Image 1 (cartoon, rainbow, N blue to C red):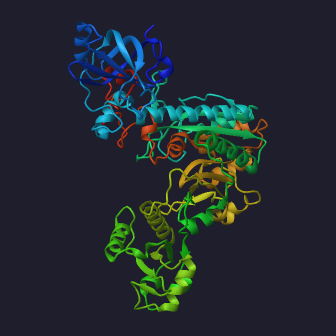
Image 2 (image 1 turned 60 degrees about the horizontal axis):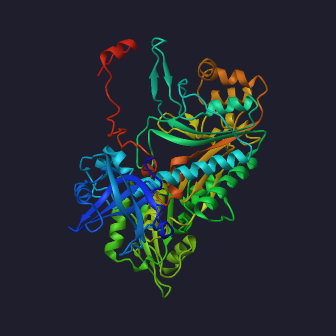
Image 3 (image 1 turned 120 degrees about the horizontal axis):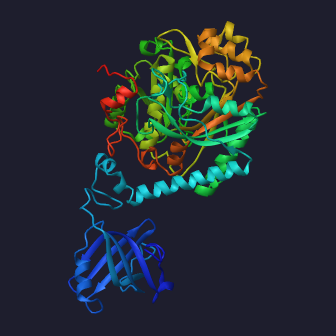
Amino acid sequence: MYRSHSCGELRETHINTVVTLSGWVAKTRDKGFVVWVDLRDRYGITQLVFDADRTAAPLLEQARNLGREFVIQVKGKVIERASKNDNIPTGNIEVLVEELQILNESKTPPFTIENDTDGGEDLRMKYRYLDIRRNPVKNNLIFRSKVTMEVRKYLSDQGFIEVETPYLIKSTPEGARDFVVPSRMNEGQFYALPQSPQTFKQLLMVGGMDKYFQIVKCFRDEDLRADRQPEFTQIDCEMAFVEQEDILNAFEGLTRHLLKEIKGIDVASFPRMTYDKAMAKYGNDKPDIRFGMEFGELNAVAQHKDFNVFNSAELVVGIAVPGANTYTRKEIDALVDWVKRPQVGALGMVYCRYNEDGSFKSSVDKFYDQEDLAKWAEATNAKPGDLICVLSGETNKVRAQLSALRMELATRLGLRNANEFAPLWVVDFPLLELDEETGHYHAMHHPFTSPKPGQLELLDSDPGAVRANAYDLVLNGNEIGGGSIRIHDKETQSTMFKHLGFTPEEAKAQFGFLMDAFQYGAPPHGGIAFGLDRLVAILGGQETIRDFIAFPKNNSGRDVMIDAPAPIDEEQLKELNLKLDL
């Protein structure tokens, strides 16, 4: 038996108990007549003591030679600690060691394995197995496990069946690039790793498994950022004989359960907002509603003056920043520079101070009088003491720019409280999205999303006006889940493929298996997929997902710990009938 107790469970009730502990040496302190060792395992830290008055000389010398991260086993008696430590649960006791065995020595680690480490991110990712010993990463992985278990518990209690679907599938056009896998047994042919189990979960509905879920790895070969990985995890769900309302109610229940069980928070309501309103009021389809600063459109009150920047713009829109009239000119100039960055792309920013005495002072006073500026304040719901920030230009671009500014200002003003949770359903998305470069439409969600009832006929006359029977669940400005009611009959699916530019032959080649299945009694069905990595990060009060993944990849898609991806040898290439052309 390597241990009778963990390093985090001993308390004053264990005093005079003989225990066996195993773990890693976190720290040693040698005062000559006494040596203290902090022994760490997953559960916590226990202080060990080797005392010259009570410890045999060979054992004391052995303790002095212990290095950081040595793996050891000790046996000894729990005693009361003379100098107590209120910062750890075991701080009232220590173990007077009677026996010590070194189970494994350790090289000096490349960074300190402490909560606040001296290791940079690249170094910690290279030695991720050491980074996991640190409390922040360890606790994030434990937190992820807890969330995952609660998901499984809730869905299982609601009658969902967990079904695994294949990883080696057929490449289909679903938006992002596929990762492909050559087949040795089928020369010149390739599997693809699934971007999602979309078609399989629909086939499970045809198979009568009317409530399915799976916590599943998905793969997309796309450009990376802090909240995106080439492989990620979805909570994938599908239900048969349901309408949109059934799915929204079911997964509001799951989200409420997680907020209650994980965070101890009761959420009274999940407001609903149309896609068009989200874009008009917040500039994006995943608005953070923990704070205000809703957009106010100013075309009617800012155009038709002598200010040509506004007159020539498709949209003039502003936000009222609460209390920001105190910003200095230098701070406002810094905001102007911020929106001009290439990542945002605005050409400039107009501002207007709403003074406490009710007067206004703007950067365009030459063109607008007090009465005009009062109308700006009314349109943006500004109050005395606020700062009105205004951008103008092409509608979609300027909304995205002002949305970025809104989020940046909210961060600076401390309005994005990580311990406050504001869920929101965004509904009534466009079914199709126009690619301005090619002039062709593509599916905003995926090709299997059904149009709203009664709108199928619009596909021929006004495809851009068709609304999808689709919905996203947003939490604190992040899309944590998205789904739709699916097309479940062959004729409607064929019509959809036609409008997406597929010939009947192409549709048959890509999705013939699904179209064939629809001929055998496919039920009405729909579903949703949650991004588990992002959901866990938000519940954990963080914006990025990397530290909630055991072995993440960097922004180049590399695992620097195992050095992947990597070349394969010539023999493997021959076996796979592949030739590199680099």
